[in-house]
Image (tube, rainbow, N blue to C red; front, side):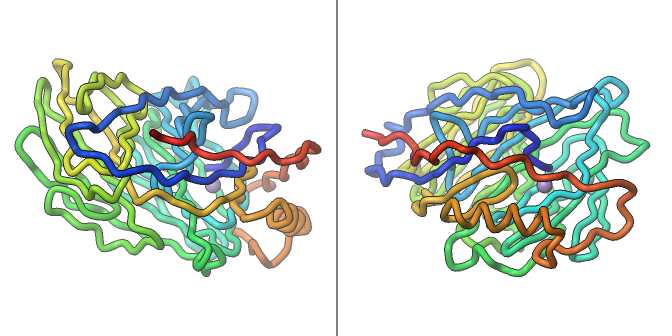
Length: 329
Ligand code: MN
């Protein structure tokens, strides 16, 4: 997916190091989504919970878009022409529908429910994402992972993984990155990460052991879910700082509640995010934008996409103001 805001802000993001805290004291911060159009006259809208003013990163997770369920006939579905990425990985995870992915590695893949597609756009990659003609309802999440300094110019890559669903008392879990509930994803990442779909039974409750070195975010897709002592409603992201050794999810609704749990150790590098690029400086962003506008080999060519590519928006004139996660006491 592309960030198609017409005037994307340039964000300088960093995570302040906080003190560790006991599991009992886990404090949940509720992050609400803002609606963002994906572009076009009948723009499909997505609910964006990361980045936002209150929080820019959870672990290395730096972007979270949640969309649907939406009737493609009404929303137009997803139709994102070729666009570039640098310094990040994209994670596509669907609940319903199907998306056709093409990239400049030569990948031509279908994104399907329960199947993770992880694309690495280190030094530079470009891709297109279009919902298939058979898709009547589209529903899922698109997530980005910031790459650490050592790997931010990594080679282009594309990995596909279908996690085996795991049954635990009260829930079903699909771990696409990292480990949870005894299930471990074989997919490599450049920083420790957790990414899992968790469906909690109607009125069910489940407790997971988690790494206390991780901070976590629970995105609620459906149902009302109590995380520790905080009730989260659909489209909300509940943030738990590091220090918690377990997380308890209680579904307070009469139907199964679907959630996505993200986690990782706080990402302590300062990054600059603008449009679809992550760099370390304004100059990194300027160079990436120029390379895309010049059709440079840095991003390559997508074979088989019927149509043009997304032009980069104009760079902001304003001086970039540093932006950090708020200090935590
Ligand atoms: Mn994209």
